[in-house]
Length: 420
Image (tube, rainbow, N blue to C red):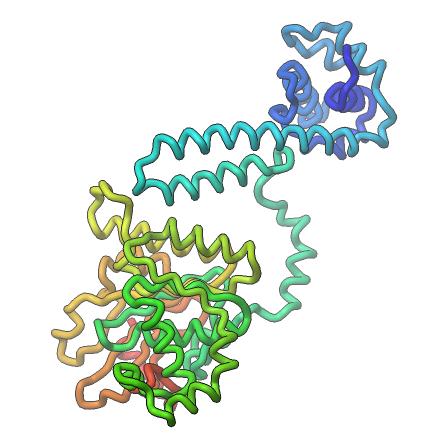
């Protein structure tokens, strides 16, 4: 039988039990020769049963078409030295990855050629999944043994939790800060200030990496005007006319700060979680991604032809954003509309149940914040933390500076009346 990395590995497995311990991560599908893959499967099965997997045991067990006892004996006889096991395993893995990549490319081409234009973003994500699957090294076992992980986990416990402070001390008092892997939902009626809070959150988070701001309602120019307004204290209304010399001086004084903001503005309308995930993953490959902010949840769309009920669609949006937070290990902040019911109640304060299509959103979110303004106190922005998986609930007030589209610290006021 012709000698090659596959025959070498099989020979080592038949003659050196210790060598198998270093190469048992290989999968039968990694072998180009189907007969070799079947023989490898027999060897692994015997090893997992703690039975001998030497020549005598395998020859008496294996019934592989095209590979008789003499051929198996030849593999054992021509086995290289055991120390070469890792070298040959690496060659097999790389060749298997090459084959899987070629096969994935064929499937991707077929998907792309058959897809409707509206399905292309989904095809792009499917293509990435195919490539990720092709790039695996051997047949890795998913998950981890708790005992083996214990020491590593203790090291993690000794390190501080990776929380990024929010711009508001009172909110930090309740939630600690933005937590990687968590989904934050900020709900409010139109015009109350959820976009203001979302943009300020992005401005704070960009200090530790790039923030993806997916704004489905505003244009990039509107976002830039708001960034200038909140940073340089230029009234947003001033951008409706030529700026005065005084306002230009304020902008100039903050040019360095504004020019170095790491906020990636995606102002495409009519996109969904698939496109947001694709953009986020691209940014991750280019550098550190610190957060994703979506403004806002109910404006996301699905491919044409999706006939599901709206509440099912929004439930899927919510779930996809939670999975995105976990996959990329970043906080995802999703802004959400509230139903009209809150405005009709006596106190007007919102509840979690007021979130539009709220069931799945409430379930998926790690933290839910509800915003409210009262007509007689327009500068008071009430913030209620109605759900908090990692801490306590409560409420506080921010001072709403509408001219500069920002909300700033206000005195702490514990009040749980509308936080549940």
